[in-house]
Image 1 (tube, helix red, strand yellow):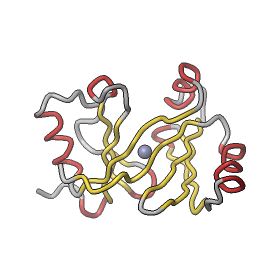
Image 2: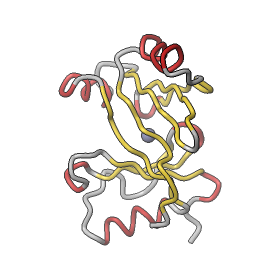
Image 3: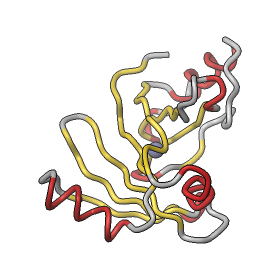
Length: 140
Ligand code: ZN
């Protein structure tokens, strides 16, 4: 799998503007980037803590996966993302080992990353993401 660290933790929030205050004013972190990923109907804001990031996720429309998540479970931890050196291989390997995949092949995520999700049913309830920078993706 070549997993190297927790790249980020994704938090579903109703409002990035509201939730950001907690991360900046209370925890003292700094928001270093915001980005909208149209494909996923989500707006994101990133905070760095060591090698790991906190990714706030806000729905951009009512049919966004984030809107549905909040409807069902409320705000909170949405997913954990592991950094991997080769996301295409990692997804293939997980699939070969019987893990149910949401993404069989990598797709575009925020911050110029290739991302792919494992189904929470195969990960003991945790929506799990693999990610790697686009430039060193799947040329194996
Ligand atoms: Zn993520």
